[in-house]
Image (cartoon, rainbow, N blue to C red):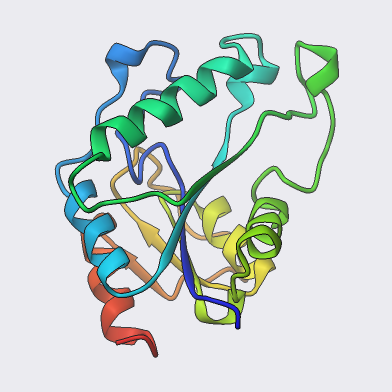
Length: 188
């Protein structure tokens, strides 16, 4: 039986936005991240980070550094009851400096490829799941994958919704989004 999940954008949602995070000393969890993740776990949601990492394709960071960052996030969550079950990232960019990453792919948000991959690998049900992110491309990704879609205003993007795109809710941060999910989910 497929399980519900909350798919989380990384930068601006789980951790503070740093434009292109290229040093570990720049990594900062938001103050509410641990509690929000813990609440999702207690409610029975699988949690997966879904993140575009074009800094790899742009030659700003090595792909191995993405793994270093994700391992450090896991380390900081260790022993808190907060868990990210899996990290998914897209290193591609159509105008990439590095040729092997230069492609228009199905995994770069707003395309739903990373959510679809997570659903296959982790036996997740998009219809009972949610995408939470700080940009409208996160909302579009969730919509394309068939999940609920929440926009949080904890990142720097304050743009208006593209025509025809609607979030289920617009909230200040991940903790507020988790509260909304728990109130509006059939899991509650």
